[in-house]
Length: 159
Image 1: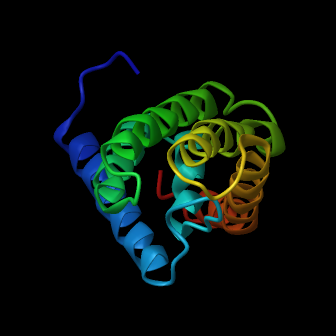
Image 2: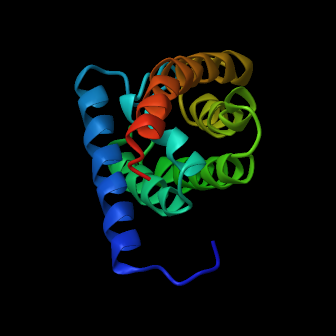
């Protein structure tokens, strides 16, 4: 992660960011991107740090762009993006562990950060409930969509 980014790395990060943002806005069109109950299709991309550290940058920027549309506004742009950055780094660091373990950070970190935000800044529910809602949504997308995506990436050797 300390090496200088090549033009190829920048392009890959930009493509990941764009794809993340588009998929989040598709989820938002169905009311599934923001709030206590989330099923962001874009969160399936959280598996990408297993393959390349460049994904950390793309996911972080993509999350920032996506959270511009958040009902929590600037707070989600700051804390939601920080959660994505932390989860991406931890996923990358755990990449040599089993996929079940290495994909836990996006589930747990987002449940903590987003659960706290929703509990504090809305009247939807308390922290424990929002933590569980967000964790469930994250787990469904990260494991249900992300794992099959990781198998496809591994087979096609895109990274």
